[in-house]
Length: 112
Image (tube, rainbow, N blue to C red; front, side, top):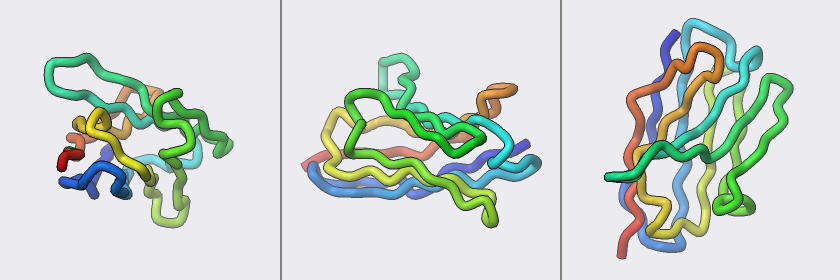
């Protein structure tokens, strides 16, 4: 089982980014996957979940700004982030709920 995030970077407040999470060793369509983030000096914060059925749920502060999706053919998940705020700056991870497999993360920095 392997997950690898990509797509992070530096963006101005109000900007957008799309993160990707490429999975291998299992089919993403069969498992619940979460996006979590961790800012420096803070704990891990849950951001969003997409379950095996494709249903999604979001943490209140990102609701309406972030959208999670997946491409089963590519075995890849995405986190579309819009109207980014400085408080969204963090290391973002995708994680398979069963077994808590997590990728190395991708850094998002929102700053003017």
